[in-house]
Amino acid sequence: MYSYSATQWLCFFYLYCFVGWCFESTYVSIRKHKPVNRGFMRGPYLPLYGSGAIVMLFVSLPFRNSLILTFLAGSIGATILEYVTGVVMEALFKVRYWDYSDQKLNFQGHICLSSSIAWGVLTIFLTRVLHKPVEKLVTAIPEQVLTPCTYLVTVIVAVDFALSVKAALDLRDVLLKLEKAKRDMELLQKRLDVMIAFAEDAIEKKRQERSIRSGELIGIIEERFEKLREVRGKDMLNGELAELRERFVELKSKREQLRTVENGYRKHLLIHNPSMHSERFREALDVLKQSAEEHDKRRGKIRRVTKNTEDMFFSLAGEYLPDSDMDKMKLREKQYPKTFLVCMCGRKVVGVAYGWPRALDAPEDTSFVLDGIAVEEGFQKKGYGTKLLRAFEKNARRYGFSSVSLGSAGGKTEKFYLKNGYIPTEYKVIAEDGTHPVKAFEGIEDYECYERPQEDGFVVMEKRI
Image (cartoon, rainbow, N blue to C red; front, side, top):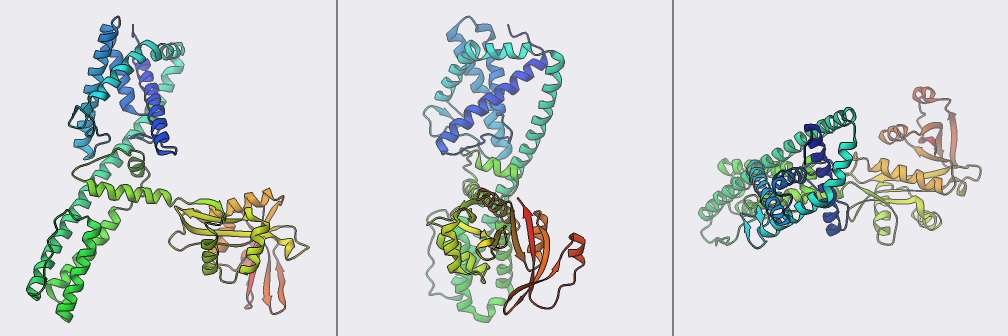
């Protein structure tokens, strides 16, 4: 029994890594009420389950005829593996990716009785039920097919593992730096307290009875500087106090940089490991988790305008597209609701797009006009404009239209439309009696070489959808 080649053992490892990922991701997704890609690595595999399965098969081999001994061997072997893995990962990365501290009969939070029992039950299920069909599947694959496929998966997993380890080490370094920044700010606060005490004897210092979070600490230090500004006036800018102020600005900026989570692998570790825990770096880890969640929410989701978002839609459109006719927009929104769109980041509207059939204003035109599109400053250059544009085109097509047209006055927005497949067709000038075409473009070169007149005008652009 279990007389397999090295390639077959490796194949079993990857298959059980995948089975473990399916189990964990499904379980966590149900608890979180949303899809969660669980695990240390980004791919669909959990090495702890793969390693655990191999260990279970090995340690239960001498006891395969005894159900009780199979249970005990698997329970002990997998528990040892879980403990060693937990200790090594915490020592290396400074965080725990699982923590049984709140479970009864746990040891150092890395293992517990209920987990060990579960490992034993899984060993019986694995050896008596699951492994038999898996074994048949793997052994039925010809060696000349199995070997290259297994080695290809090995390369993919190795690259993923290396990038995940690097992200975890980077996360550890960020935690250490955030903790150091907090200690430096605490020292700075104490120095300011001493300076205040000397500057004004009437000041009553309030002793902090609890651990202050770094966010609160920034506010406290700001208050100290404000107090010293009142007491010392112009001397605020001189000597040691000026140096402290510069140091505070530097620390605050450094903290903001450290808490920014944009690396994909690092963000994955923080979001998809909800049980990640660290006693020493609890606050810093909480800050990074919150930042990762905020960054995840800022990805931008395109939605139709609803009663809940209507006010934010018209407010943003009025601010960034001041020439828009709000009364006309409200009327058209009732007629063509699918093409009145918002880009949501969490509960905030950060972008808008809207339009209607051009024939409503110009009967001879058969296109669907994009009357306005805008993304709030601070959320630009994140792809939200492109998302809005694509959703608008899709919904215009649903209304039965085959093209979208728009007017662009030049600059970055014109380049944006060109990048998204819009073709310049003509140039129009704006006069008191309306708009008048002055140039029909015969192609992109003609458009690029055209010298625009001094009068206010815009380029008409069109795209087949």
